[in-house]
Image (cartoon, rainbow, N blue to C red; front, side, top):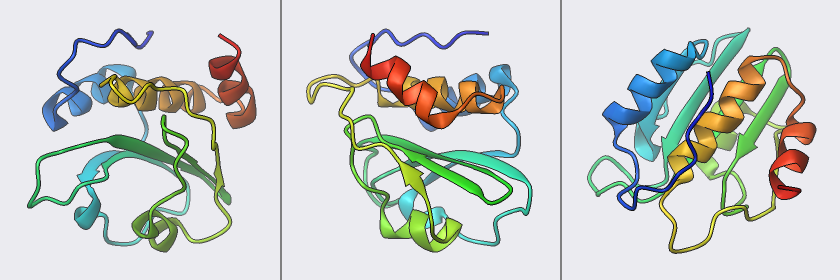
Length: 136
């Protein structure tokens, strides 16, 4: 199943993110606001999408993480570094991309996250995924 990267102009809600992740059959998926990322991470696979605002704020921007064993990845379509909540949750080291693939006035960050997580979930290499994105 493919992820639609078209920007509809209003971004994705938590319900929309969860519904699409369910369709994509993402393993151990969670969708959270930044202050809701707590608990112990599973030893095997887990992935998620995190909004960079807290639960007391309106959502602003989605980014994502993926963990499989000792491999940990973080993707932000603006090329931002992982927030402290992700670093605390996953532990170091975390591989991440600093390439900006989304324009400031676009609202397709949720779609980018689902695209990356879907490919990782299907066993593809993080670096290859990022290179494919920036070379499109």
